[in-house]
Length: 278
Image 1 (cartoon, helix red, strand yellow):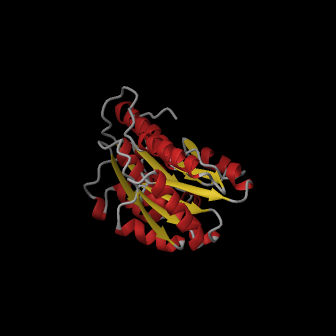
Image 2 (spheres, rainbow, N blue to C red; image 1 turned 90 degrees about the vertical axis):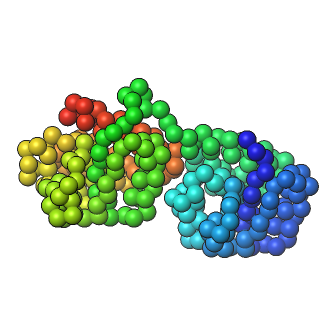
Image 3 (tube, rainbow, N blue to C red; image 1 turned 120 degrees about the horizontal axis):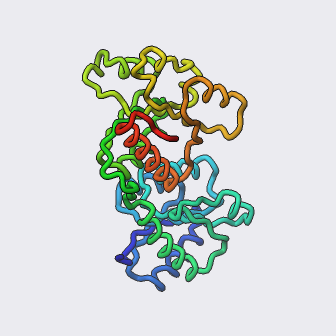
């Protein structure tokens, strides 16, 4: 693995960025360093130049900082993001299982920062590597994703394509479009029947998801509902009305990869046997 990394330091304090830049250049002269004074400026750099690592100040404004985290997670999952936190309470409570998201206490010795960058960089490349299919062979199943969130859909599609390049994932954003797809109407006249249906909880509840009951053939397709709730009495309704499972949406890249792996495997089994054992 090459150690010639491109680093972006995000901190509004010019004294802090100057001190960190000098220390890093002295310790690792082969690294290329850029400075952004805000999270928004850092997002701009991500789209204009190659970046391997983002080191950001944990005291950046919450809203822009969250936007930067989402931008890296969705659009640049291979980038290592390290946040330096002055509040020790943030180190454990919000720590991600994704190796390319690390939180360090501030001030952080530059030697420790370099070690964390190198370690996280190596582990992040493993996080983003294609995963095995458990001996089922190259997945060639079809999945239908019903979700109105462009961000969640793009993130899932990216993870799914990475893990199962042989599978087809079709996304629709409304119950009406899902019904057209399942009924092979309009633009979906030639659409292959899905082996597994994934439906966002909000759309499932809004339309009471009666699509599967309109055809005995469609009733054989397993339905997985995805949502953000942990505990809710309404979730029992989901399982009582046709869903095979309710799965909470992941919040980190490695968990999106794990979900993609498991759902792709279930779809492959469903394509073979018309049953997905969830």
